[in-house]
Length: 208
Image (cartoon, rainbow, N blue to C red; front, side, top):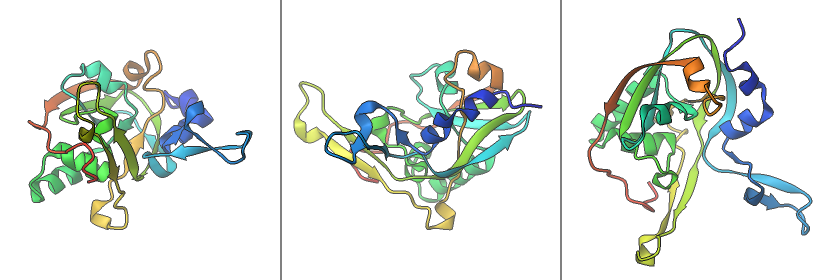
């Protein structure tokens, strides 16, 4: 049986997004003075994404913000399986840090990207789907203070992938099609939600 998101997965852009390619016209490096030959900037994403089939009735997890509706969190592309969620929970307990901090550090998710990571949802796959799977890549993001805020409040966050240490490797899933109209409801059935943390414990520009 074909995967529910087979068409989205087959689109070449899906792997590019999974590997963190910035595909906008303004996110290209010029390889020649006229900009006729360009190279996409890679920031975050998965190192060497590999095709990963997921069968029906499999529970998946995704972090978001309490300010979001469940539907908003479900429409994101980045997910985890239970084994990886347990790994993050274990790391946060051993190191006495919030679960959101563990996600930021081990999955390379800068706070500047907007998610508070204090909200967790669980879904169950309705049928077979395809995902890209792999280890996190280093991510960089800059925070520019809005008008009225001191400039020194800005900074750049660099979260370096820690894939050289086996205990810190957390494979992630990128599932194409979650942003397509009706995509989440076609692939998932919602099963639960949890607020995971209180106050944020990561400072913009902290560098991890």
